[in-house]
Length: 173
Image (cartoon, rainbow, N blue to C red; front, side, top):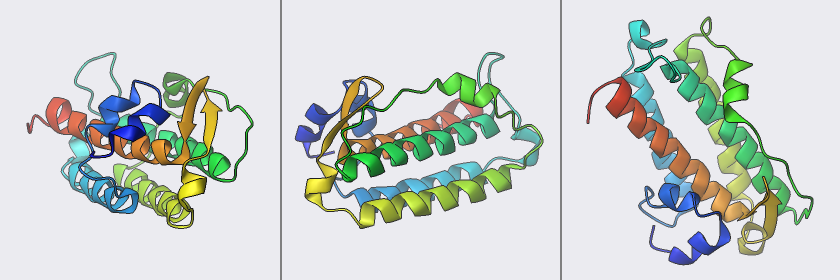
């Protein structure tokens, strides 16, 4: 990402995600990560859907569930901040979300479809907000964010997990 100023409006951990993104164009990057997700999860055979590369790691389907869950949460936060809502938002425990949403009986193709619906809704949020709305600072999980930084964090988070699927689950990189 070229715009290094964005790093100042988010927690330090987001820098890793921002570094995975090629441009500063949120809508373009949402589309590129959508296509990446379709490509990566399209490579998963039915026999590998419930595969985990280590006993204490999520399965491939759980990784996609996590991507979807976090996009919903980050998009909700971004929506609130884009409406200049100063209410501090709570954090989430991602591992509890996965434990409480065991997905061994849902098909990967259904999760991919859900991802597409969520991504479409997220993209529409961002297509309809201007710079002032993107740059309103809010607090979530005791950290400062803007709707803009949350958008890039969603994209980078998505890319990170797709890269993990390719390397650790499918052995492609």
